[in-house]
Length: 128
Image (cartoon, rainbow, N blue to C red; front, side, top):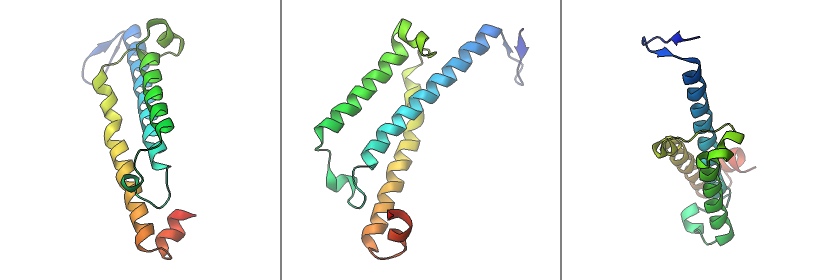
C-alpha cells in the first residue's frame, strides 16, 4: 500500500498514519493556543487589554494549567495514544502564534474604534 506523492517521495501506510496523527496533534495544539488568546480577549468589551492588565490570577493560573494539560496530553506516552495524539516538535507550537497575534491586534483595533466613536458605526457593528 505504498503511495508516491507529487514530489516523488514514497509513503508507506504507517508513514501516512503517523503524518495524519501529527497533523491532528498540530491542529489540536493550534485550537488550544487560540482559545488561550481568546480568554484574554474576552476580558473586556471596550477597555484595552493593556489598560485592564492581567490581575485576574484565577484566569492566569487557569491558562497555565491549560498549557500544562496540553503538554501532558501530547507528550505522556499512553495518554496521547488514548487521544490519538503523537509527540510533536516544540517548534510546532509556534505555528499558531501569528494567528494569535493577529487576533490580539484585531481585537485591540476593534476596541479602539469603539472607544474613539462611542456612538458611531463601530459600536453598532462590533459591540452588540
